[in-house]
Amino acid sequence: MEEKRPFGAYIRKKRLEAGLTQKELAGKLFVTESSVSKWERNLSYPDVSLVTSICRELGISEHEFFTACDDDQAHAQERQAAVWRRVKLGFRWFCLTGYGVALVVCPICDLALNHTLSWFWIVLPALALSFCVTSLPWLLKRNRLAVCLGAGTACLLLLLLACWRYAGGWWLLGGLAITAVSLALPWGWWAIWRFYGEHVLPLCVTLTSVWVFPLLAVIHLFTGGDWLFRAAFPLAAVGSAFLWAYFICLRYLPNPWLKAGGFTLITAAASPVFQALCRRLIPGTGNPWALDCLILTALLAVSFLLLVLGGIREFRRQQ
Image 1 (cartoon, rainbow, N blue to C red):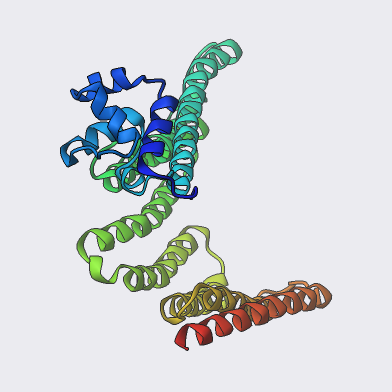
Image 2 (cartoon, rainbow, N blue to C red):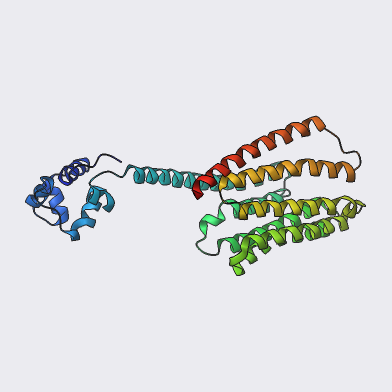
């Protein structure tokens, strides 16, 4: 914040920055030129009904008007917001331009190489699926998540059908089944967010913990083998336990430093646990103990530092 200056000097400064004479400003505000002159000489103050008009003409906020100084922090935030808007707009146009170029170039290349449209029918739903993720949300005003999920689901199914039509084979049924189970997770998240808004995070964690088991079962149904109960389910169960540990850390630790330290500590524990399970359950798994020890030591050191900083901050907060 700049040092507060007298009201009249501030109004004069902003008038000059706006490139206005006293007469021009008076004409825009429907007051006399002498009124503006008196404001700038601190002989009188504008009527409260003129505040909004004065701020508009001088390009200042009402807070700056009443404090008679520039709010540098607010201006910095406005500049950052403007930069972010330009970045978003640029990304939007970049994506749209890329889609347009691909829609022109890909069919031309397909026709030139194969004299017919063949693999382009795979590219088309793939581009549509990408569009649903990158560009469609910006074009919607309401129900963005539901519409994007629905459109993305349709594009993904069309992509599978296009791949099957181009490549042939009997894998389509398995691909559709695995895709259906995979899509159950984002649709389940959306249903929880839409209908059970009070407990979104724990319900989403519960759904994720349960969802991985039918996904593995469906994959096993079409691939076969003895890996499902011997390795996949035990590893999935341990992974779900660590997922809940992350959730408890996020939910109940009081400040970001402690949360980050807890996350790092859980990750440090997960690494040797999963390595040991993989060596026990999956034959032929390597045993890079030197690398494991190095990673574990680094994670433990970082978690200790974060937990100490979080503990100090929490201790100071409670004083």
